[in-house]
Picture (cartoon, rainbow, N blue to C red):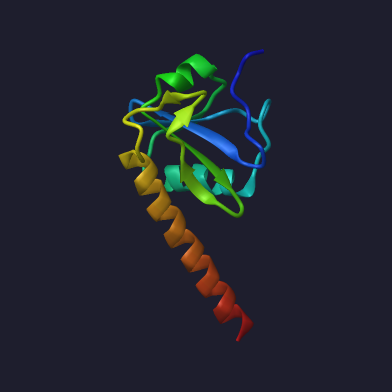
Length: 116
C-alpha cells in the first residue's frame, strides 16, 4: 500500500506541524514503548494521531524518531539519505525523550519499592 510501517525491531514516528504521527496497527507492531509514547502524548497535551502516512510525507516531516524496548526513544536524522527537518533532534522529540526517561525512572523506583 506504500505506507510507512515499522523498522527492524523499532516503531517509527513522524512529527509534522507540532503533531506526532504514529502509523496505525495495520502495518506496524504495537510495541510497549510505542504505547508508552502515545500515552505520554495524551497525558501531556501533545497532539498525536495514529494514521497511515507515506514515505513522501516522512521526507517532509519536521522531526522523526523511533521507539524500542532497548533504545527507548531515538531521533531519526535521515531517511533514505534525505535529511529530516533540521537534521538534528527536534524540540518535540527532545521533550518526549525527557518524559519517557522520567516515566522509566518512576517505574523503576516503584519496582524497587515493591520489592522491599
